[in-house]
Length: 235
Image 1 (cartoon, rainbow, N blue to C red):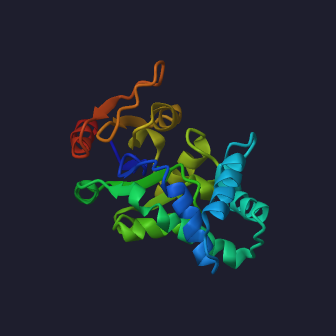
Image 2 (spheres, rainbow, N blue to C red):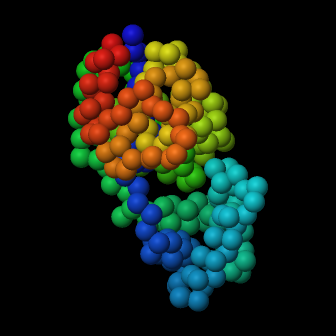
């Protein structure tokens, strides 16, 4: 029997594409939000400082991201208070909007699952502040179709750590073995969910993670609507 379905966000319900040109664009947008005129030189300093800290050993990106950005700004000679930092982060996040695209059948899939009486949730690794990410869910018409959404930046642990999965399961009030997890990553999604006893389905409609030696999913879905077939088999 199946009581709930949990989804990954990026590359499952929404496709996120790394666009290198948006890195300086994001820094420039943040500077404008602070009332500063971005110059190529200042933007380059910010990008270099940002990347240096992002790659620093021991950085807990989920928790440290706002502090990381504050440090990068300080290196460029810009001190910000909490309100200014929030404005900067929001503008930077908005600048990355061209990298995000909601899958065309996401709403239809969630509505169909809801009509079958299933509880729905989202578990995602994401570094941006939770208030921006939950606002994205509202903007894309996802929030009202879910019972819970948990991002690693609010839980403090990335998938495949069990903490973030357990937080979502507890909020839904469901047992792992009665829950299907749908995600694209073999290690983070399939491996993490299976370790807790969840049923697993690898989403391959955007890209197929074929990492050698990766955990084997119970099912694969080649389109979003294939998830309905998996749910039918499990029920």
